[in-house]
Every structure is written in structure tokens, then in C-alpha cells.
Image 1 (tube, rainbow, N blue to C red):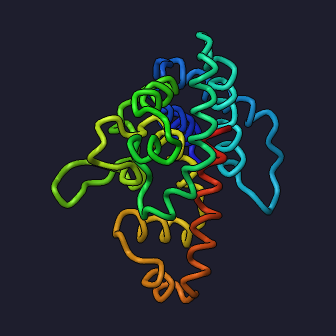
Image 2 (cartoon, rainbow, N blue to C red):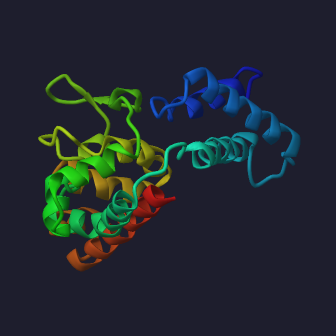
Image 3 (cartoon, rainbow, N blue to C red):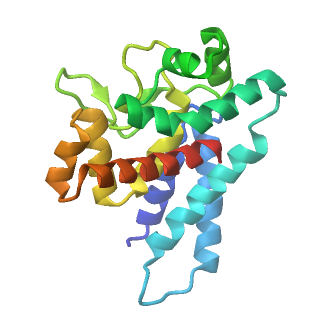
Amino acid sequence: MTTSSPVRVSRTQARRYRGRGVDTEDLEQIAFEHLVRAVRNYRPSGDSDFRSYAVPTIRGGIRHHFRDNAWAIKLPRRLQEIQSRVNAVQATLAVDLGHWPSNRELAEALNVDLREIIEAEQARGCFQPNSLDAQPAADGSTRSVVAQLADPMDTYALVDQIHALQPVVDDLPDRDQLILRRRFVDHRTQAEIGIEIGVSQMQVSRLLRAILGRLQLALSA
């Protein structure tokens, strides 16, 4: 790595978390602090380079900051309960529906008022979807793969959750990312995905549940 490369890496990690109520400069400062910590603690070995050690250190520091400072205002118990219930059913609903459930679908599944779902999701925080590592879509718009997991027709899409998931999806094995893309972006059936990757439809279903379970854990972390 060149002298400036670690700085670029820390800035890239910081900017993944833009738009969540913390200024970009503050995020970069947090990232730089943990970059320095990584430099101090890194012990070279044949198994890993500095970048593979620094990135998790920086990400972990930023995530700890959000966890430690996220709830300046006490969230009503009712909304906390709804958030917990949403986290518990999203992965299963996504597999059953073939897309990431919209707020309306969540409200129907949980038998609660749509307005309560919206309030609970808005309480997680807001961000700008275009701050993610987006890719041009066929219609010329810019949307990331993860953004397309949300229902594009839902004006209250789960944008905060998409933001939280982007780093997790980036860390998934190539096959898992391919499965997500084929199912939720290309809208392939589980049987079609199975043929492509050489496994049965039942195995694809199990893989999807495992992948979405991991994403679900990331949302509740």
C-alpha cells in the first residue's frame, strides 16, 4: 500500500455511513482515529496484509460510535416492539415474497397499522440512498444492488436498513452475492438459480434463508 492508500481506505469506510445523522467530517475523523489504532496494533504476518486488518478495525469503530450515540431520544416502547417484530420476520417474508418486504407488506404480516410501521422505520434514522456505492440501472437511474431489495413502489422504503446492509452485502462470498442478485434484482426463481450454481431448489431456499438471516442480524446489531 502507498502512503496515501490507508487514508483513502479510511475515507471510503467513513463515507459508507454518511447521512445517518453524523457529519461526514466527523465520520472521517472517527475512521482516522481507528486507522491510527490499526497501525499501532498491526503485526505483519504471511496470512494477512495491513488492509485486511485495518478495514474491520475502522468499520468496527464507526459502528461502535453509532451504537453508543444512536438513541439520544428515548424511542416509545410500542415502536421498539414493532422494530423487534419487523427484524424477526423480514428474512422469512423476503424468501416467501421474492423481494424485500415493503412497509405495507410488513404491516399486513404483523397485523399492525401501516402508520406504526412507518413511524418505527423512520425512527431508525434517515439517509440519502445515492450515498451508497450505486451502479447505473438500465433506465439511467443510479441504484445499488441492495437498494433494489426494497420495494421500489413504496415511498417509505426501508432506506435506513439498506444503508446498514451495504457493508454486510459487500462482505458476503461471491456466490451469496450472486444468489441475492439473481433472486431480488433479476427476479429468477429458486429453481433457475439452482441450475446456474449447480444445486437443488431446496438448497437454494436454505442458502437464501441463511443469507437473509445474516442480513437480519446486521439490522438488529
